[in-house]
Amino acid sequence: MIGWWGAVRGAASGPAMTYGAIAVCCAVFVLSPVSGLDPVYGTGDALLSAQSTYFERWGVIPVDLMSSSSSRALITPLTALFVHGSWLHLLGNMLFLYVFGAMAEERMGQLEFALFYLGCGYLALLAYAAANAGSEQTLVGASGAISGVLGAFLYLFPKARVTSLFPFLFFLPLRFPAWIVLIFWFVLQWLAARSAGSGPGVAYLAHLVGFGTGFFYAWGRFRHGTRVKAQAAATEGESQP
Image (cartoon, rainbow, N blue to C red; front, side, top):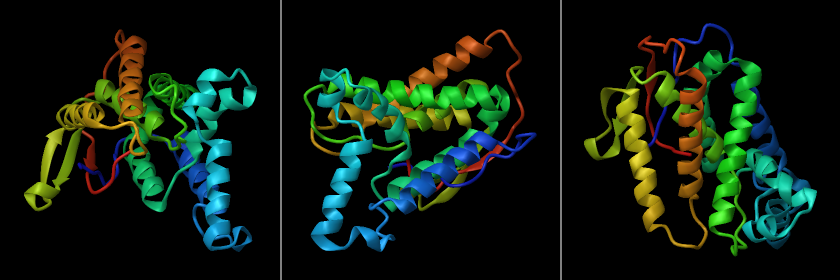
């Protein structure tokens, strides 16, 4: 598994939507029964029951989304973007958003970026649910939306320098253009999606749909404008959306 750690430098102003999404996701997680920090949810079986109810209420259940026209089911691809299944899941996703979100938001503008982020996330989760329409497994996390940010970043900043730490190379830091790193990430997701089973696990298909949506949105939106050629820097470490 390839991971990432670091920060992209180069945004001219504060990425309020990126930081806001990170803050909301973190706050929601800390206050949820999944964090284990709130004693009101109890311990043992009571805590597990509260967690299961929490995921079912706010996460995407493909069979419900595809077979129901209720507003509650239709809104779950949005609520699920702010729900995470573990501390590692949360921190990995937020690290990706922090690394790549700032420059994408600066290029798009705050309102457009917010709508883009939510739109990519919704479409990614909807596509996964459609492909697994009979599944009762709950899907949560911001991975689809963040994958959209990665796709947009690939189009907008292909030459941004990314310092990568590869576990199989003893974490030796190597610098590559963003287009190499992100295409490599996409290929890994595609290979993983082909070998993934139907049980619980990482929703690689949502990653692919989010990434493709983000890339083609950026292409359609900015192909007639000037692409940014500044060589921003990022670092890569140990988690992924």
